[in-house]
Length: 237
Image (cartoon, rainbow, N blue to C red; front, side, top):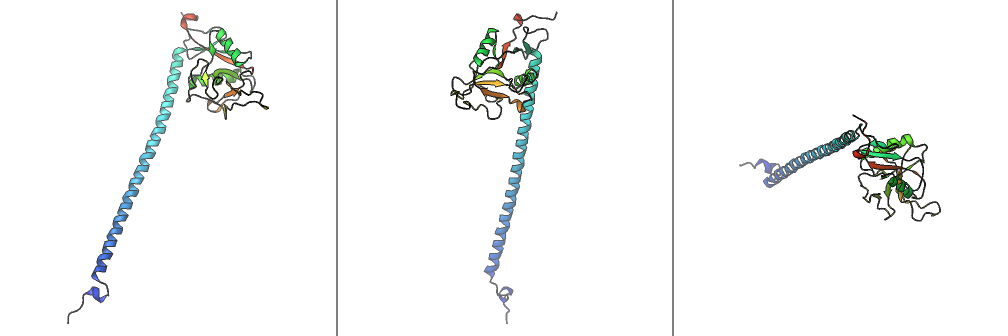
């Protein structure tokens, strides 16, 4: 008498064994795909992290290069053989005048122009650094601020320099929530604060020491004019 195949003895059909094998292969394939996907994701994260790190490092290097460039330009233009007029200070190829008297923004500008210059226009971080450090020496108290040539009196919120050029958004040094266009305790200044002053006696974090103020307030000021060598005395032989 012929014996039955082992699978029938155990009560399992051949198709059942084939199905189990197929399911096992399918699970194995899915696991392999999942592992490959995880590896690809990990590699992508590593690449993204690396690119981010390189970008940060590149930005820092660019910032350092800009800083060194400005220092080199300052050294080249601060020719020790030339001097600004009496009362003016030489820096970066420009002459600066830090007033002692206090007047409104408009009056301060008129006084600067009468001296052959204008209220200062800040064109670089290096210039802001110089002015902020210099003001720490000449300020007598915390509220002893200085007018700069920045105003939004023509169009609220559109800050422009005295020469009409718009404020560079990458070169602004407002303190805290300024400009806030405060209108006074009882709204006595409906036009708000339309002129900029600067200075922080105790030092400013990240050079942020600009404040908007009422243009009629009396403050000291910073005048600026270019160094024109033909008009200044040469003291070197």
